[in-house]
Image (cartoon, rainbow, N blue to C red; front, top):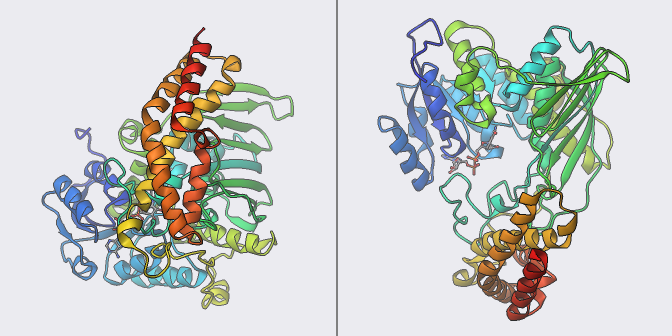
Length: 509
Ligand SMILES: NC(=O)c1ccc[n+]([C@@H]2O[C@H](COP(=O)([O-])OP(=O)(O)OC[C@H]3O[C@@H](n4cnc5c(N)ncnc54)[C@H](O)[C@@H]3O)[C@@H](O)[C@H]2O)c1
């Protein structure tokens, strides 16, 4: 990296990053793209220190007013909490900076109207940082689509399933994922957000591949939650929706949490050809008929793909930064302007409204039109937050005891997952086809023996905490996470240990 000049100019863009967890991911790609990271802002001390080590010359602060008065900055990348992006983007635009914003752009329609109008008033560039359309596979499909290969969009199924239970209790942007502190609180938005809001990684690719906008959405309420979340959490379940696109075609957008993550599974049908991809294997269907020929293909990057490969998220993080820099330096428009950012963000907001109304179809308003915006100008509706992440124990709780809560949740989950894989693997051992996977089961049974003492000890501590505050949301999450290691741990540790040893002996025969 580094030798090739990407833009035909020596002009540099001076960038400040606001929110240095996810925000720090962009430092590496920035260097290649005429972007100097000159400032950073985060109120978490540990995260600021880590950022300062990566960018020793940057001006780092916990104070957002100081950050936004930096005269040496041209642009701000907003990667703060999910629900703060609009407020922070508007402040940055009003202070005279170009803005890149992490997904999604805003949390309520009224915020969306304010944001669009702030962008229009400022004359500055605004880009949404939705990265999934810019994987090698999706960029290749987009190119074919533009060339007319697929004909007209008829139907699509895209998935972003990401089970984030442990991120309710651990801080994923710090090394080794430490439990969230104080330990009697849970993550500020990952613990409760309705996953429909986070619809962009699966809808975004369909929009960018086909060039269509979403117009209507319907989502049935899903009522079955995975155990171990705080009850009522919108992150604890699959969140499918059906979306009518602007040409009349339909897509099924599946995001949410299940017992199997799929980050990029897809099927997409055009009137001349179609494509499907499962775990990185892309097939095209050729011949414009039901019995079309199924052909595996190796997608190719456009120019600069090697550079993209060397940064995060399958190259997507590189491309979104590239398009922004290109627009600032050359004027050529980036894919995610404020209006398409509104389309994808509003789809999530309207999906939440649809399932709150038993699946009733909802319009996805087009904020390009001022008269449409007027209808949403005062619409501050947002999901009813099921609990306060800072108050999952009752008022006056014993902090010495409750401080252990996030560690218990994180550790019981970690060790229960080992036990579950081992025991469930043993129960279908004879039918497992690959020899390596059978060996994995034996390794996991061994590993289970190692973690049993910690698991039993944590279960005892968790039960004591549940008895102290049995009606609290925290107690319900603890009770839920403990079910993952049951029924096995309802036996004494010695008996379970003997059973596992016996199982291993019989499987190895
Ligand atoms: N596109 C992707 O693939 C992707 C991946 C991860 C996260 N994200 C998005 O990035 C955003 C940040 O996520 P994250 O993983 O870093 O977790 P996070 O939301 O927990 O972290 C936000 C960071 O911003 C800081 N912060 C929040 N408000 C602040 C303020 N007013 N002033 C100073 N600092 C503030 C917090 O201390 C924290 O370090 C989220 O909105 C998330 O949706 C996107």
